[in-house]
Length: 333
Image 1 (tube, rainbow, N blue to C red):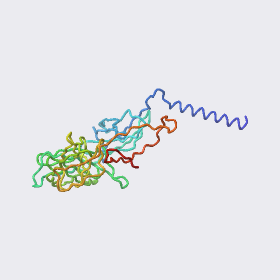
Image 2 (image 1 turned 60 degrees about the horizontal axis):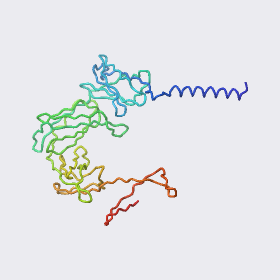
Image 3 (image 1 turned 180 degrees about the horizontal axis):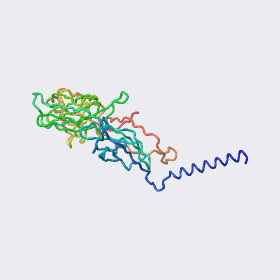
Image 4 (image 1 turned 60 degrees about the vertical axis):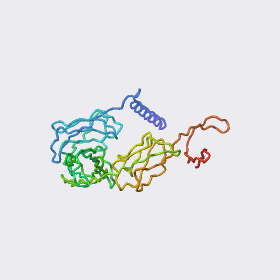
């Protein structure tokens, strides 16, 4: 056989193998991809099994499995698809919640990630009082734990809690992983207050002492459009307090609770109205009038100048719309 014939034969064989591989991977009818499992063993710092530990998986933000460890600390998450890497979480009473990121699933087999170690973590406690040092009963406390990766602060998803203070204003967090713990304290008639504390490895208890919530200074007003018509459904927030945002009613009026004397600006958000920049707060916070610009939808069809036939649109650039005194509109840009 000549060299050319041998080469042609080899190429044909390679093409046949490639076609077979493609066909094997081509699942007709949109059949689901192969599934696999993630297995492991949940243990403490000394390697002892943690029976009953809750274990679950997240594919980006979607929960894809949940189970509990057996008496030997072993678990199995299945069935799991191959399409996304999984973050495996484990939690148990008396331990700080932990995770293993970027775990890959292999179709038709188990991927063992043993061991998954749970640490004691840090319990953080404190007492919430008012400006007169009296305890605030039933205060709401939102807790978020953040971690550091290569010098960057990254939100530690799934490590968020909402607690309630007791009759004496006291609270204690579950054991939190090492990182930067953010607290938000909220109570009726009081300023929403933020606090941060570092949870250090090896520190099992930390006391914040007394946290004082000052009396709120409610911010009231009305939001209208450029014609003076009330603008309903507009979210109004003091500075960047998204959790404390108020929404205007049908009459355009709003009241923001939980703000203090230190609030500097109001930010407005809406799909129906535009607020070009934040509104600065002055001394008067009880009868504010904020003006926004009503948003409009622009519809049209692009056509060929000579034939008049529709053409595909590659780019649409929004221009600045200015209303002229005579009621007409001018486009700039």
